[in-house]
Image (cartoon, rainbow, N blue to C red):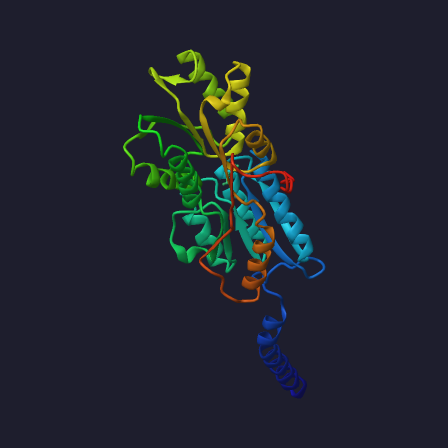
Length: 337
Ligand code: AHR
């Protein structure tokens, strides 16, 4: 009987000890909500890039990789091959991996709310790069990129000054960037905000060329073939406003193929890749508005600030310059892309 009582007391004591230890064991076990860290303790940035549709885009990706290396930040990179669905998958994989910060270049403006809610729920801060999005501002920490409205505004301001002594009608064809992308919308709005103040300017045609050289060539070819030259519905094309250099180089390819001298028109482009600066120097373009792709160093500063718990500005803009046909290029530094 005595040994039976002893046994019961022992069992009760052991059970009490186990119950007392449960909270300690619970807090000692790492939770699956703990952030993944790189093997060497570096910050991890999940970065979703649109693709490599232009030399500008390739330089932008390089700039981000170079700056990450200089700042000892590890990048988990995804190339979305021009598809939003790939970007959504990539961002979700960054969330599963529990990176420290997510940065992405949104190919189009809409459709990001759900995935950004998921990032917010996982407490992973997000930086929107290069293009802007339409969604609740509380879903991302900030935007870093160019001011598309100002770029369009600068392109139109050049045109207005160049045509200040012309009183006849001036017909403009616009080769627009990717439909529903913020950058195409803003470049169009900035341009119109200036030319709409003058009756003589008219946009007689605007078409989406998806920022691609092949599309720029194809659109120009179609116009030339259907109108037997640089005309549209009987109206001469006086100006081409192209939202990026890739499309501009494509339209120049078509003009060269048909032995049409580009200097018969005013051609304005955006980006300032080396090839378009060369075309400007050769008199084939009249104005190139820079879109600065070297956002890597600024992005890494923002990543480090966010990771340290600091807030970042809602919007950070890269500075751009404007190159025109009257510039002196004798002292100019090659672009490198
Ligand atoms: O979003 C920036 C634009 O995208 C650049 O002007 C263009 O070259 C790129 O494809």
